[in-house]
Amino acid sequence: MVFYLQKTHRHDYMTNKILIGKSYWNKIASGYSKTGGAKWIRHPWAVKLAGNVKNKKVLELGCGSGVIINKLVEGGAIGTGADYSDKMLEIAGANAKKSKLNTKFLLLDVKDLSRLYRKKFDLIIISTVLTTFPSIDDLTKVLSEANKVLKSTGFMIIVEPHPAFDHYMRTSFINLTSLQGMNYQAKGKGYVFDMADGEGNQVESIIYHWRFEDYATAIYRSGLYIERMFEPSPLEIAKSEDPKWYKDRSRYASYIFFRLKRRQLID
Image (cartoon, rainbow, N blue to C red; front, side, top):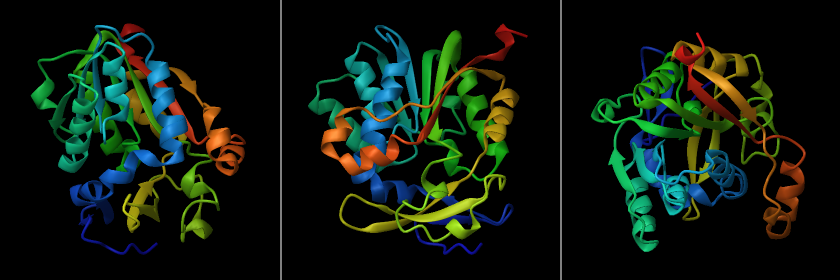
């Protein structure tokens, strides 16, 4: 498959794969949290599965515009949001200020949490981050770093596009040009598509396909285990706000949610 390298991405010549650059996330920041999947599945279900967070220390890695972490702080959490994009964090911080929330935001790479090693969190949320990386080693690194700052009694919530059904696996996805090459067994394959930037423009993006087996491998290698999995349906409110979208997305699972705990507790 041929990738067209844009200014928003960079080429890793060691793996011959395209990596999504910081400028890409800055470019789509204003519209990132406005999609149906984010509003009616990913964000509300992540908050619901977090449970009672009052006085709990919560970290969201790849927090984007801060919708999830700000909602948890609203529910009483002591929240920290971290992201690679300064533009995303600018929007997240503005949203927190508007709602008078004391959410802390950090600019950092999710593959290096050394700034947080002295801290421990009750809950860590990682939402639609792993599919931006082109190797299982990357996935393992992200989860291993998160494990280093997770309390022994804490848990993680991982949210990713469902590997069997979502986005790149369906003909309904926006401007998808690589569908003919779709193959569930093609682990680590990059699928190119156009994503709206929130300002009426289309920005080329890449999502890497990871099977359930690949997620399980990275989770185990990072010292974690899957306690539960969830495949939630959209919120009912979507039925009235976008009936066509709701009808389509109610027939299959758009996202997979993993609840993870530290493996050494059961070994």
